[in-house]
Amino acid sequence: MIDLNSDPAVMTYILGRPATPDETAAEWRRRLDHQSDAGRGLGYWAGFVAGSFVGWWSASSFDGRPDTSGIGYRLRASSHGRGLATEGAEAMVRQAFSCRDIDRVVASTMAANAGSRRVLEKVGMTQHASWAASPDRRRVPGWERGEVAYELSRAEWTDRTPDLE
Image 1 (cartoon, rainbow, N blue to C red):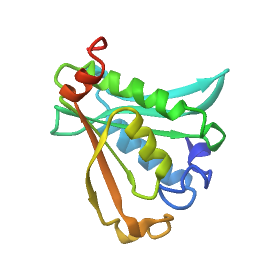
Image 2: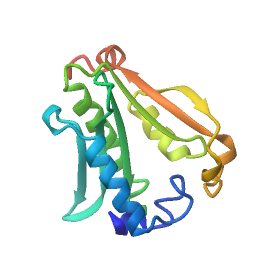
Image 3: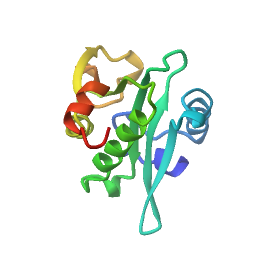
């Protein structure tokens, strides 16, 4: 994860710079301690192609919001544009909705991150909110456009993929 987060291309729309090893360790402590619920099948998955690590995907949990799962992903720059983000995001939506108490899947990204927005739209999510980016995101290209949130309800997902429900 340190190697992944140290790539400036990977971190462009996250920090606008490479993450330090300490920042990566803190990020994963938070993710594993507060956004994973293995008992419900919610957490993080590493992805490999031909034995090589390409990134991670998540169907995470939220403290105090048992009806909602967040999906996310982060891939090596060499894996961008190969459909892996979309393939993994689709698997994460399925994983989230495999929990019978999950009614809604959410995700957020920078408004300027066209690639990530395309992935979320391909998996059936629609934009439902936007807000100004915090000043600490000024290093992120397009930070002035703010951030956007996407969501997909179980009912919408079931209508799109009735054979998977």
